[in-house]
Length: 80
Length: 136
Image (cartoon, rainbow over all chains, first blue to last red; front, side):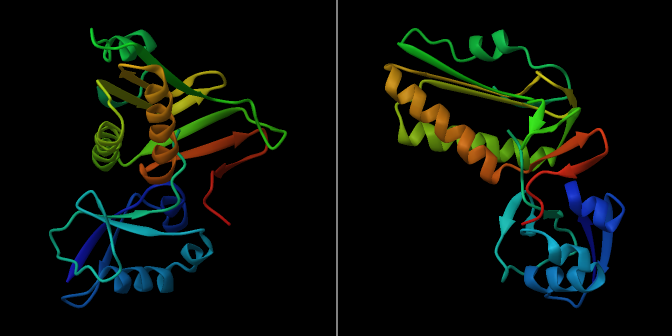
């Protein structure tokens, strides 16, 4: 299945665009997506942390992803 | 009032949003753009937000504070875009019947905002730029 991933902050700079697309097996979990992206973009492994948000909520590594989910990479936040 | 804005934050409006006849205290926190980080001069900041999630998380902060303290009203407004030195990046106002709870609730909101709300700050220096807190 094809997943579209929104990118923010430094992940946008590392991947070089505001969206990326990942081709991943059906039933893939958050941890599979992160591994896939870290393999493709080793710069992500140098970050303090990278979390995944699914439908506006932080998602644990074992959450299963669906093609119509809104998915985003969340590098360390620094608001305020 | 829970909002993101790319315009200068109207502080009076944020304070007015928490006015309540039952309030004995209104506590306001204003986070501003400092002209240096670890003694290195900063030219300006740029804030980027994952807007839908950031607003949702800011609302959760207001709800959490209201569960823990006798909060009457909460307002949280965060700025996005390019901010010059001295500008307000975030304004938080909390009204409570007595002052102690207003300080505690306000501090809780800004501390937790910095941990969980998906907003990112880039520091721009004379000779480069860096996303804050990205690297260990």
